[in-house]
Image 1 (spheres, rainbow, N blue to C red):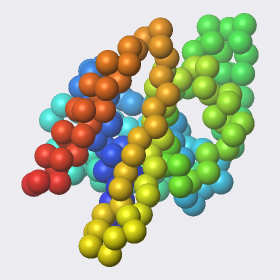
Image 2 (image 1 turned 90 degrees about the horizontal axis):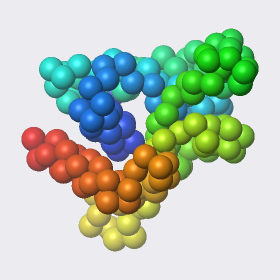
Image 3 (image 1 turned 120 degrees about the vertical axis):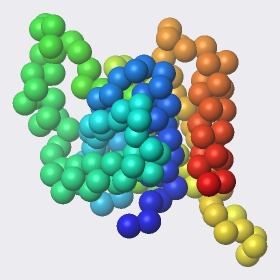
Length: 171
């Protein structure tokens, strides 16, 4: 299937996240238009992966997560993350969230994961009113842990994400 703008942005963000951290196993909290519950996406990304392979992984992992959707609270309980008095319980399931604002991520999920998230990106699409416009206008709203990031660093991340998406679009 043809990737959506959200899939392309999530893939580009995942590539940048991999490059920043060196991690090849990424866990990202996300939303879905078809699943009622928020999703936890586990993406395996390597330094040699071509961008379009990452896009296909994002699509596949999202489809699998939607098919196996489980309430977030059930995942937290099953993994013992609901016990704050244990080492494992104090570690968050993920530190990064990536949402499509046209989906409706549950408010409870947003509230309960906001304290353990270092970076949250909301993707918003606004259809241009002009008939000559082919693509929707996309904007990002970003929440971040100010103990870890300065606003200049977030601006750099957005700039790098924009450059990567433009290069992909040019090819």
